[in-house]
Length: 268
Ligand SMILES: NC(=O)c1ccc[n+]([C@@H]2O[C@H](COP(=O)([O-])OP(=O)(O)OC[C@H]3O[C@@H](n4cnc5c(N)ncnc54)[C@H](OP(=O)(O)O)[C@@H]3O)[C@@H](O)[C@H]2O)c1
Image 1 (tube, rainbow, N blue to C red):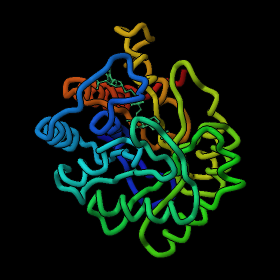
Image 2: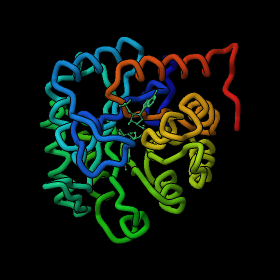
Image 3: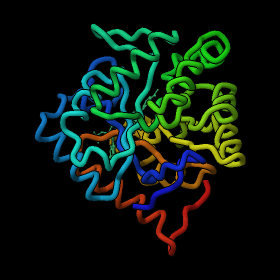
């Protein structure tokens, strides 16, 4: 699996990353069908398979239920992975709430370090509640992240943003942005264009429309989605969530084929 630079962070990530909502949380999620959380054996097998296929990049968050805890306990060759986690969203008793205060941000990162069994976190993103510019203008969360970076506790930071204005601010002022792009949603393209221009890391989320891109769910197709996203400017990696080994194998195979030198990605 091809690796790309995550902007100017000095971190290289596989073009396909693994999203881990589905190993930790099955309430209040937007997938086409319900599911049971996989048991430990299934999670270990999935992670081993991902690594054997060349994936070195994994996305988690405190808001993904037991995801961070399970990764800390089950991730094979723990130090060979680049892990993205987040701050700001708390999911408890089936409900999300948000806290972007300085103290909460610091304590959330301390908790993530413990759960993930790391001395430092690779990438920490602010988990936006949708009001990107309100968080940016009125909350001290980015000051807290900068102070954690100054102390060496995190290597890079940014935001999983939801607006063009917020995404562009993140590109200009942070290391990494996580943006949405898929066959049905191209609104955040200006964020990608700017990131490419000034060499900032871009991680794409919801590239398969949380599973709704699958033809079986009435969508335009998984292969077409990958082709579209890998043809967009500035993309370092695309995080796809799956707990299905066969989907994981298929996804890696499609991405490798699209990126193969004899078959360059088509821009859509
Ligand atoms: N605000 C945020 O920060 C935010 C929000 C959303 C997501 N994320 C991150 O981005 C990751 C991806 O987002 P997402 O999980 O919402 O959506 P996604 O990656 O677009 O789609 C995941 C869904 O697609 C299905 N899928 C995967 N490969 C498939 C294939 N080959 N054929 C058919 N179905 C397939 C998966 O089901 P199976 O398990 O059956 O394969 C899963 O239900 C998340 O895990 C998370 O890490 C971040």
